[in-house]
Length: 374
Image 1 (cartoon, rainbow, N blue to C red):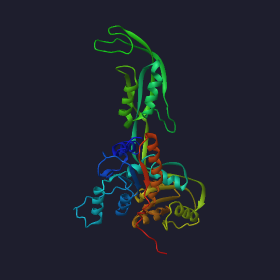
Image 2 (cartoon, helix red, strand yellow):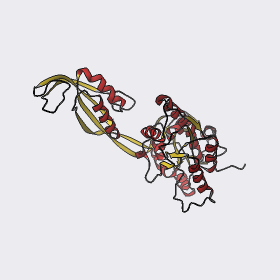
Image 3 (tube, rainbow, N blue to C red):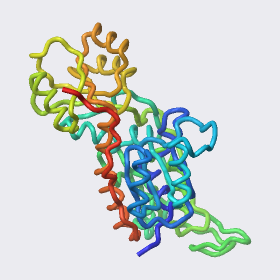
Image 4 (cartoon, one colour):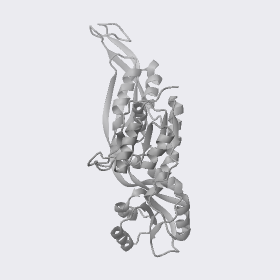
């Protein structure tokens, strides 16, 4: 087994939900402690609250992974009479590192909003509101025929050759490579000063722009030549969009009252608010956005949503939604706690793959501040 450090975990996580996907000024990342210390027990939570920290201390946790950043606003002082400041002091006293992934986890493929959409049973989902567009490159590399499979595999493992729902996508063209090694060269083929020709293939595949450095490093590591020859082209017609929220279709339409009950049960809430007067209307196309998604309601309208699920709907925004004729369900911000189970499974899977000696624990503390009186 391998000793896991915070740095190693963060590096792996940020390939899943890269920081550049986060919205502006979102205080994601390392918030408390150091990423250099070993991680033996990790707690996965929605919020970092005093009760969460107490749980972490009791369970001898040394790393907290949170969705919501623990420090949204700078502290004005460090007086521990304030429970919030005392919480930070407790984290430092017990050497507990805190790392958060907020809007980057919301936006990431297979992240927060996909879990919410999956929970409600949406199919054929797409991004509700695009927030980031990534350019793609085409890589063309010339490789000796005898080494083509080694190089191709290395490029795929580094993240090249993914198109939509397809992996390991490439194109190969046979040809003849010619070169003359000069003084100081150490050719794997041919001799210094003598013209050489080698049967080669040209391998082409596309890759997202952010993976270029990693893929080029993998190419150079796997290629048999001292100086591999390759080209990188920008592709104008192929881009990938990331964004907040998801919209998709229920398997079968259902009456609005039945839909409300489904939302309540799926997200395990004691109550919810809704906007909509036609209570017998049928719901089929649904948009969902975890957290405070009121300002994105026009995108739900544009994309034909019969209902929009989001939290923290502001009073005056609710009036605008009502006027626009949009049916809205507000089950609260805390439904994002759904992330604890899939994150625990994902991190446990990584631990097995990487042979990390770490235990992943979902928080058992509820950080829902609201209660409902009936």
